Image: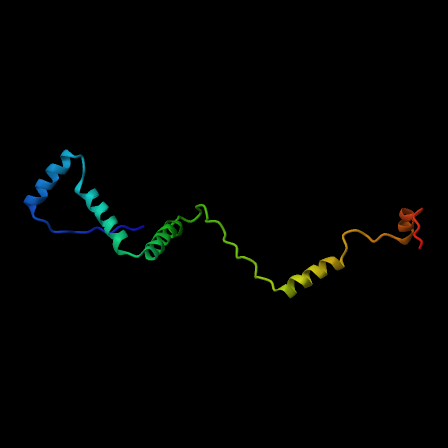
Length: 119
């Protein structure tokens, strides 16, 4: 994400006093201001807009890669949704071509040999 520098006017005497006491706490004015801006951003900007901005920020470094660098993965589209009729036709087309050859009548008779049915 690109950064923008903010310039703010503040009384010099107050700034010196602020730096003096923040140094004692091992804190910086810049970090405190960044934290405050982040909190204000989260409070003022709707969550959906923040999500959009963050997704754009993640895409930017990928687009700025040098040529020859590792390319992002290819995004494949989902296949078009089929209607019931299309699925049935596809299934009928697959069942029309049997995976195994049909048995001959002679082999069926051999399997059923010895079985009789009478009423």
